[in-house]
Length: 197
Image 1 (cartoon, rainbow, N blue to C red):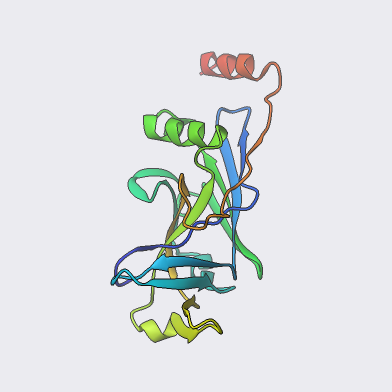
Image 2: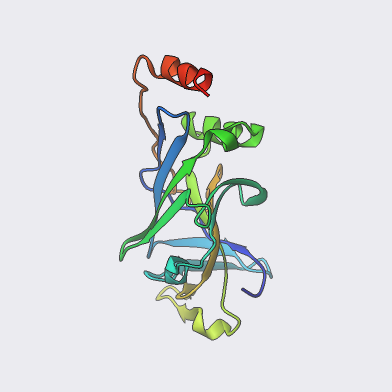
């Protein structure tokens, strides 16, 4: 990977959090392809950006190491493909994620804060962090929209991470969080498992 890590505009459709009986939390969501957002370039000019279907297909390689982070901070990891706690699926419509945030990670204050913010509906966006290939022309294309706006199309990007974010770049990028109730005896079962060591 080369170049500066870029945060793609956040989109989340149907972000789901589910507390599991073993004390872990499952996070599932999707980053839909083909939707435009308006961003500012390095010179402060407005440009539109659209991530095309398949742009993150390199992340599907077996040796790829992609992380789920809290707010684009590598100091706040929640899951990863290398550890087997993050699964990515690249479809024609979206990059889909499913992460298992383990009880060990949930002992970290930042992880509990990230999950609490998502459960409260405050941090419900998904935002990809990526770099363009060294040969930028293989990763992006520029076009002019009928209204004269510059549009940057991301056609290939090296995905490094996907983050749970509070303020997505897309105004419409708000996810609904589905809260799943635990079984009535889930807490008791967790406590009993701790004592069976």
